[in-house]
Amino acid sequence: MLSIIVPTDIDENIYYKESLLPFQKHKDVEIILIPQKQAFTRAERINVGFHRSNGELILLHHPRTKLPKDAINFLIGKSKTQFIEWEWGGFLHSFDKKHFFLNWISWYSNEVRVRRKGIVYFDHCIFFHRNLWKKDLSPRYLFEDTELSQNLLKQSKPILLPFRAMTSAHRFIKNGIYKQTLLNFFLKIGNLIQLPSSFLFSLYQK
Image (cartoon, rainbow, N blue to C red):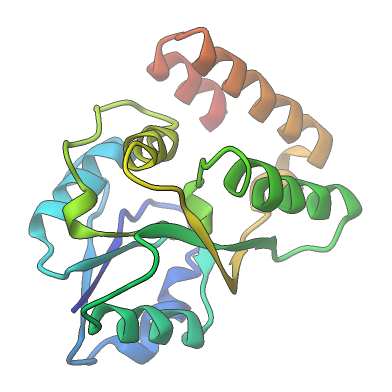
């Protein structure tokens, strides 16, 4: 079975519904939605979803990312096999808006962050084998995907599957592409120097 966990939020841009519509009654798919009212931080919602799941293969589906049907069907097929040549990873990142700088962000995320550094952000839609989950994520407000990647990296390197994970660029459009990029950079620096995640989250929400 493939378990698809979606830590939903209150944002209206919810691409995940389009991804999951063809699989609502699929006998080999388990869909688990964890709303914010059940657990506030996304890390906590992922923890709750994992412990409710039953599948050997787990897919963490970003609520503002849309996966093609073939991508999920591919994971369903892999969930049925005894031998799988990879253990965890994500899908090729892209935005739903065209801009040369957004294209560069996607390139960097795919080629540098994932393939060279082994860090898979949530909007790549992270998948992994159940037995790789060794401990729950800390209840941090941001960068839970980095923590998860670091945990999984201790066991193997990620793979980037050749299906497009199309993510909403709404924050870049709303706040301005360069302003949002600078904010994201500041948040990463803040995370590296271990500023409180609640403080970083408040900046991110603003």
